[in-house]
Length: 374
Image (cartoon, rainbow, N blue to C red; front, side, top):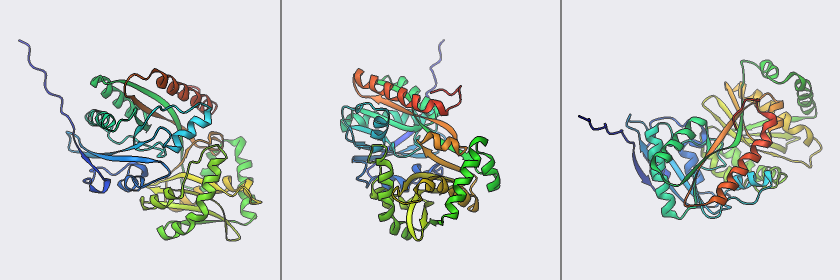
């Protein structure tokens, strides 16, 4: 006699129109970009042209809760995604609206993938929402390999459309160690002397770190910082940041603007978060017209580490891109993946996505370990 197969426990899911209406998650968000405050702020932005947003609250069979925020944009509505296309010199990939789980601007995604049951529920609900909103693709950026694997398995089990697992980014992180001396020692020996010299020259030239950790202090400085951040991104061919991002994201726990000043003038800065023992460096801006501009970036990166140590941080995350500079500073690469569900038959888009991933990998390859899987 054949016994019936036991039913596989499933996660339950419920939609909400605004993140502030969603019940609290049972787990603390692992990154600033996974917090409720980030989702609330991102729902109001205009730099990333958000057409609609919906928020899925999941309850795993184990009882854990987690929320996934979905944002609908036009084909060219995400400046960060566009920046990747521009960086490798390919035409726009998308042929219609795109539904993102999170945002490409957020270094880390992965909400709704903690377990196989959650990934299955996220996949079903996300694909249904994409169809309802007329999206051409459902995109999960900023994943580690395990998160990507769970989403891929869930989609193949559901048997719905084409799904791609693509490497698209590199995050750069390193431990801080107990002292600044160990920070210096963590750099490649052939680079260490030059970096310390540039940091020392910046200090001797009068650069001063002004760490802004209050909402008022940050908001008062955004009008001066936002043009520097936009100008830095423009040098790479993309209008990546708008002042609305820095204004709205100030509500995220641990927000800090590490401002570099010379004679009281803002000459550079890094916007990020001190969150759960890690300093996240998210957006940098430099005044390239200032006489000390060649020193400011390296000086700021070193001063950021000194400040993080003073705050008791144990890890520093320098964000993505600018591979060479971060490798010189001793950061270690971590490949991030993007899972893409194409809605309907789109062979040209599939080809373009694979080409985008390959070219991004070619850019990153000189800075990755030889055995790294792209």
